Length: 90
Image 1 (spheres, rainbow, N blue to C red):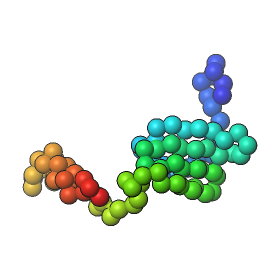
Image 2 (cartoon, rainbow, N blue to C red):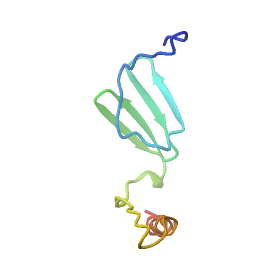
Image 3 (cartoon, rainbow, N blue to C red):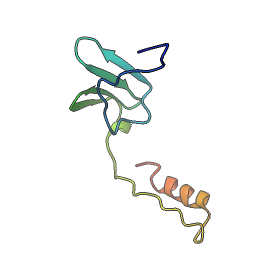
């Protein structure tokens, strides 16, 4: 990383990583990283991902459909609240 130029080089990237990751730990022996999340630990390597579930909330549930907001039908906050109630325990 160039501190003076504020530039960094991307060695590899990965799509679809969890938004609730609390910590990213590099693995110096491999070009990989550990993502520590509340429900699982994810080992991410270029081209592959392996997860270990550490509690029952880490098991996948039903995929929530995309929430479409239509202000003419109902206010957006009502739509979001109804969607959250529907999938709260998913």
